[in-house]
Length: 262
Image 1 (tube, rainbow, N blue to C red):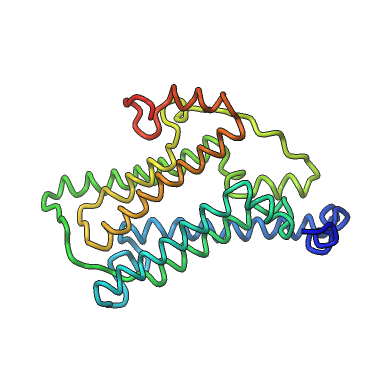
Image 2: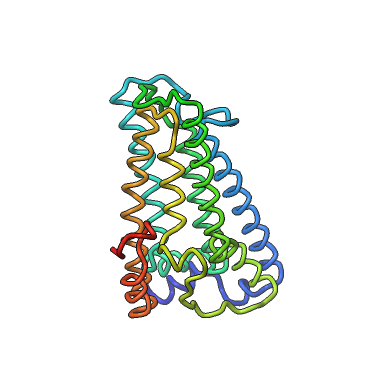
């Protein structure tokens, strides 16, 4: 890309620093966060079969092979968007077009939209893989699933929920506060496992009293993607923090607290 191209496509510092742009960026960040918040609440209902109008086990009846292909394509779309847009090389290119203060909010918005598309177009596979007859065990599994979602949310707040989802960046931009350099921290749960957010998702997806083929497909593919996502994320963290993160990997387990680090 030539210098002229860069000047044409990027937002000039004068515009990015103007008061009106700061307000617009802040409102955009709030809107993106609200879309995310609605999406994650819908995700809980979608996976657990609660409240929402369309769940993982309801929707358009579709031949099995076609349903599997559509569902895999939807999950692949989310995985590609979620992984590619999080990489540093993509961010370096992307921020030529999207101002840095709203880069994270834009990422969150795109991730939310791809998930909403998945919920909308998901095809059920209603064949039952297992069905727990015991009411007590069924309640226990539902409770564990809720606990998984609680772990997800709790873990985001332990590190910095509002930075993770873009509000911190647009707020700092609005008040003219410069972002602080990234520092490696391991608060609370992160002293015992490196990825409590991902562990929460795995628990939430797998602890179902009734497991249909569609739910099993969703849980299996998303779990596989979680391990791919961990590998990509940790590669970036090693690049960013070097030996500090390498030592953390040797000291702390990936997902299971009582296992030796892997």
